[in-house]
Image (cartoon, rainbow, N blue to C red; front, top):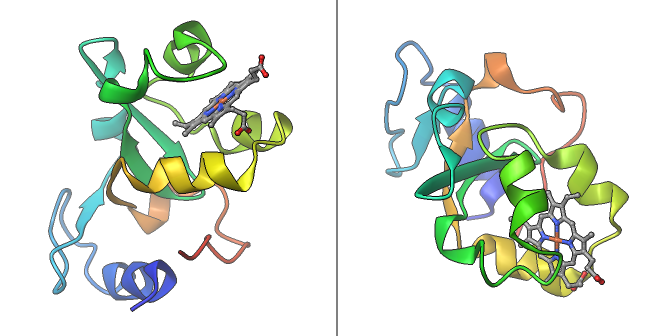
Length: 115
Ligand code: HEM
């Protein structure tokens, strides 16, 4: 199943915050992402998916600081502006922890990235 399909399934079950959908993918509110903005726990949203990048901070070729600047926030635009390679998008998959609640998505007109 593609991540896009997983997101569609997640969309159908969004009454409560932090519910798991039927395939066990967590639907996360932006308010929950936003508290994870520090080096000891750093989450980030890219293309309406939620990533826990805490373990990646020191590994990032662009440095820890730029990631922390966007910690707890939607970093879709800055991520794209850097014109990251396919390799960077593949790296991102390792840190996937859930999908963003539909009401909190700022990219909803676009089809979310599929893996
Ligand atoms: C967790 C999400 C991210 C991942 C997995 C990631 C991954 C990578 C990777 C693999 C590279 C090496 C070049 C490439 O393959 O494209 C890179 C470079 C870079 N990244 Fe990220 N990145 C992320 C988020 C960000 C964000 C939010 C920014 C903020 C603007 C950023 C800024 C940069 C910069 C400036 C470079 C270039 C470093 C250089 O060439 O000197 N990255 N990133």
